[in-house]
Length: 428
Ligand SMILES: *Cc1c(COP(=O)(O)O)cnc(C)c1O
Image (cartoon, rainbow, N blue to C red; front, side, top):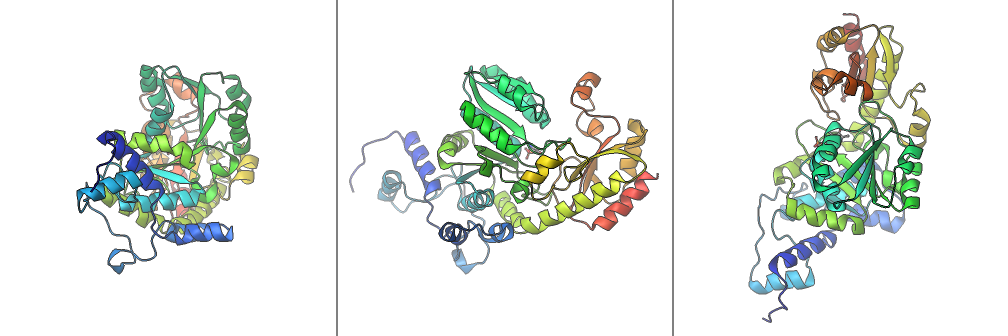
């Protein structure tokens, strides 16, 4: 046994865990098929098979849950080989878990990206990316319709580290370009946005970033890779709260970022330090949920469209925001870039104050009153009460959160039943 030139232990483990993630030699039949045939397999085929080994431990058809905080080496030479040859294996749970690698490969494959990094929540993913990319003095530009906790992290916390955040009106690409200067490092948007469901012209957004040499990030939680794949439009990073459609059963929290191997390297390294990782059980739940991803999305899209059309025609409804409706301001962009428009619908009740709106929410029998979206159970909420109850009226007005606004996240129930339930609630 020969001793290696001595790298510091922390450097070595970091470097080794990094490379292990890239060179896992588990069979990747679906990914290989993709590359060989130069055809993209369907989303359901990828959701079921991509990233998995054909033959698994114990000859089990499902992946085992590797309940391990650490991974053993048979002898010291194996540790040295692992470090020097960057062998594909696990080392310590914070750097990765075999089950996590399966799910990361599955998500990268669905998204058409090289590398996915999984986090314990969508917010952990957003924070992980921003912390990896931004230094004191750097600037980041957001479209202003965004998840309120992302906004809060930037305005209250990134500012403490000397990062400057600009917000410009959603979908105003000229305003975004005008806000770019030599310190700008990242352009961020959701698509569709929450709760207004504005859809980003991804071609334009990606082109703007490339032309000005600034990286671009799309939080595509509401769309999922079933409906849109931002990387195909030249966007650098796509991010999801996997808590929503990817997990799909309202029973887990997780987050993921997908991008090129090169761009994801620093992000993965920082995750190994910050530690926002999933438990092995949680990873299994996510893999289990993903098996039915294609089927679920098909139904969420169908339910969203049917219920949105019903609501738009209802005399007690003032206005419906759903990208699949021709009346939606971003319907054309959505049709160009999206395959379906998801299960989330926002609508305003005609001539209703906040109490009367709450009464309609309370009169529904199928959707449950809760925040979140993307699970099999339909969820309903009044944004004013659920997310903005303590916000100042002028802030609510600026964010276009109205008293008579209801957000409905259609699950996978039968659309006829959801429609009949909404009909009775609206006549309340
Ligand atoms: C829910 C959500 C998040 C946050 O994700 P968590 O998993 O709850 O941390 C971020 N962005 C969007 C668009 C979301 O809907």
